[in-house]
Length: 513
Figure 1 (cartoon, rainbow, N blue to C red):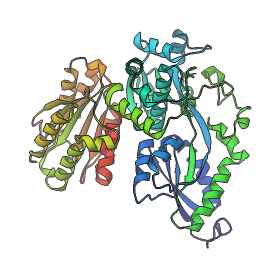
Figure 2 (cartoon, rainbow, N blue to C red):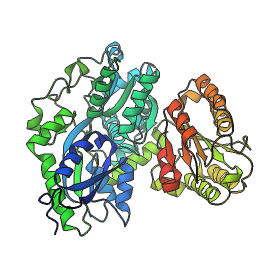
Figure 3 (cartoon, helix red, strand yellow):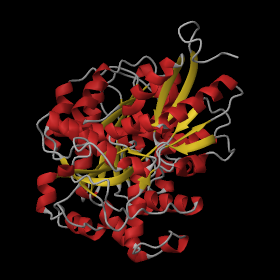
Figure 4 (cartoon, rainbow, N blue to C red):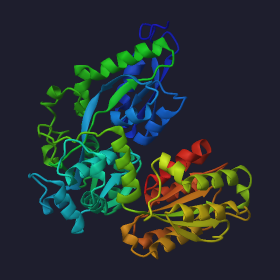
């Protein structure tokens, strides 16, 4: 057996893979430094909470360790009970960060704030916030569960019967109407907020981990921008427990290293370092003396505050709550799909695109991934080549979406490629949708080629729209993402590589609205 650590520098590093929530990305250097000392080559893969859970369901789980935001997602996905030695590494409450001057205006500074106060601010039109999807990210799920508990008057635990109460559903639906932009992971939500502030977007607040609000405030301070003030809802705060567990693959060296890594992360010295990253240590006694430059009281941060922590309900109740969110309570989405049917798509690209659309509009498959449409959702499908070929619309009911999938299946590729005119038409059609403001909008471009049109066509349409619509892209074949990256940067969106995992790319893009 390799003597990991004793042979450091004398042998080829042992590989070790970790799948983690995006909120842990800041901590990667802390881990990799220890790995190098042990002559281990550690590699991180970052996923949203649901993707981690789905990966654990698969027969082939290729990672040596899993570091999720909450043990809930490991419990749901690890039906084969492969994850061993699961221990909480640190904790972080899910909070509301509000631009400090707005927090003062709303009366949120230096006083107890309850969820009803947040709802009043939303309904007055004074507060909108960014929040991850509750069905794709732990921070969004935790905040949503907190909203449910608050609406119920803080029961001991959430039940199926609670989810059926019309008054509770109404309150939570009204709260979620305050969502301005969404995301599929907590780390990217923080990045989205910061990029928006840099670009002058009207982003006033976000729901995220206390630790990521701290990271955002450090960057905002560096930029000379106004920081966020942390609000801990007095009637219910969910706390991420950040568990790290080992997944055996029959390698004794890996298991021995994992134990060393876990011991290292839980040591007093490393737990003290975690405080420097804005994480509360697993041992509460270590959090009593903190650096005020990190846990800044001027930002509303208070590690000594007694939090009313919500209790995670049974798995089946949690899943029922998440399905309720997806199908009935979240702010409805308005999605324009630009589908490339240019000549270069003929063959594999065409088959992949049609397969992706069929999956997106398959009620059973979307429910499996918790991205199922609600009846309130609206879809615009625009196939294009050198110009838009057609345009179809549908609500989020299975029959109408099945009709759209059949129309797409009947199309044949041919002609050139102009992504810009298609996306511009999608923006125009969304803007013409009645009650446009009640939706979370997004454009998704699926293409394998470079546009032959003019970028200015899309830029003018996007800037004049004024609704901060993200334009995502999914690439095929030999696509050059240069132009798509430019579109994503302008609209604060992302480009996904459909060539490596098309289904995941589509799921992830769908999770952002």
